[in-house]
Length: 151
Image 1 (cartoon, rainbow, N blue to C red):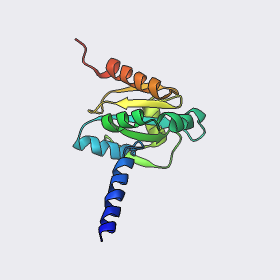
Image 2: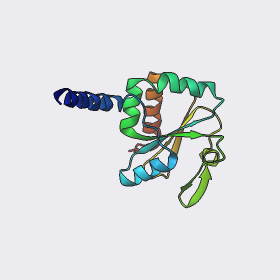
Image 3: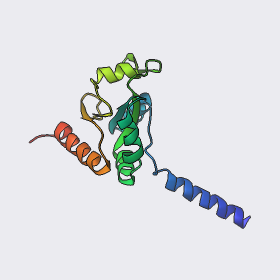
């Protein structure tokens, strides 16, 4: 019984440690629902299946521990396929496909990262591939310029 208890403790600690080893990507409607309960910015990773730079972001940038911790702490992260015309969801009383939402957000290049402020009224874009440090710096600069109150 003692070993069984140790196993469960080790398993629980392992699970807790792994909880932050990846970004907790959501669907758009899941992020909207989470934001309604606890407001936070949304970070939408708009990609396509054929985009090599999108795959490189997933492999190099979104596996970096600093990026993972920052995104999971400060955003509701969303993955959105800009060419998906099948999956639908509702947003502000209207039904969208992922492709329609990407077009509504005026995304025209990939990868593209759309930041949506907690009130869901204003957006800003950070287009293009960036390594971990450049991504974090660009994201912080974008948020500072787009959403911080000006004196």
